[in-house]
Length: 422
Image 1 (tube, rainbow, N blue to C red):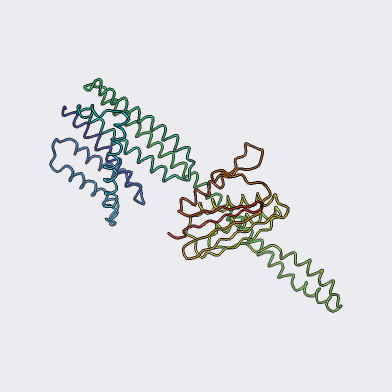
Image 2 (cartoon, rainbow, N blue to C red):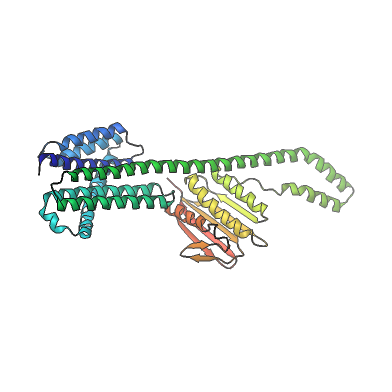
């Protein structure tokens, strides 16, 4: 093995390891790593790749890693060691597992033991696959609010390129181990995959930003409607207080005439002004806003609606609460509106650090359920149904909560238990 090839192999190996460390640090730290810190670490490992037979190279690598992590997370030095342990454990364990599976698929145990060049390329590929798998996993974990098809398409594309990288490199290495084109092809494919990952990261960031903007716009709209509703109720109360003296004079006049029937009729007429319930108020303006909007919608559809709330402080983010309450109340209102005497009951109750959400309603249509997925009885196949419940299940699962769904021929019940603490 020539000195140039040894430097090339060591450099690739170290760069892949550094990129994997960057991922671990980015996912564990509350802030993104600055480019200058990444550049310093890359330069340090590049210099480490140049000399041959460096004494205590493993210790030097550990010192570089821990120094890098301490600089990023100081004074929380425990976090630095925690990231380092996770990074090293994943690197070794994933490398062993991927090496065994990869060798079984390619059936190259014999070649691996006979060719040093083949072994070097093979180990770099294994290290790179460990990096790619970790990227795919963390992207999925961090962007669960985004439709899964994006991650699926990207994973398929990266998987195909990685297979191309493995097959083409190892095939050429078997046939022509001294080929000058092999390092060039290998490097180009690795750079291509890293570029794809970087572009996909930027795409995900834009999608997440767009999703956050949409939900914030929806929350703002709900809060504006809620504020208008509160203002309307206050104006109605002020108007009533202004007129109450006149109403009492009229009632007193009927009383002096001992005309009980007129008193009853007049009280009934002015009583209509009290029918509108006061706005639902909770410790969360977003929750108050959506509950009031759905309550108003239920009234417009002549549904008997009762919503009760009792929770002092909400730790769950607005996005999740809007997802859960919006979907469930929309489904309940839709089902109850098809009944002659539609009704809906919702309750949000906190006990200790647990928030319980229960929603009950009646329904008239037959319920079709398969593997926890509910399908509509509508004949319009272009309308997508059951997505609401799916999104709710996902939101509850992300919070490590529990959801229970029960129904009879005329009633539907959903009970949700969520941890309400940080």
